[in-house]
Length: 168
Image (cartoon, rainbow, N blue to C red):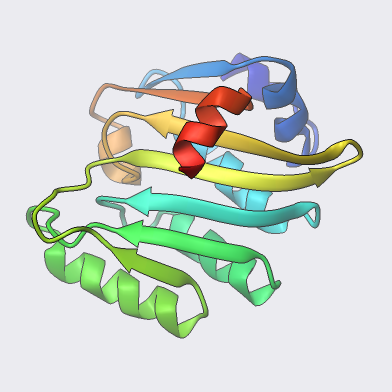
């Protein structure tokens, strides 16, 4: 995405999002250069104190699970809601859950009577003026392969009203 292309350093993505919301349209804009760059930056940035996400379906080559594990290893709060009712991916989601839990990520499973089909990630970052929340919301899944073929919209924002809703 053009707004992210100007970011020389991964942590610069947060500066971009703080200045303006960024809307991406997959597959026409790169999932790797948008969402995947966002979670990598969050896991690597020493100012990030928490990464929280909801996973309905992801892929083996997605950096999401490694980012959550890396964040937990660095002492960051790392939380993941994993939907176990992801059609065709139930087994893989159980495997992800176990791997995440063993690495110290706080894993929450979906509700028995409710399918959680959300694509949202909340990043909490310590900044000079206090804590700031950054959010990615989107349609579809956090699945790198389908992001290259299905049409989805993603929004990156630091809007406090949206961030509070995602946090709640």
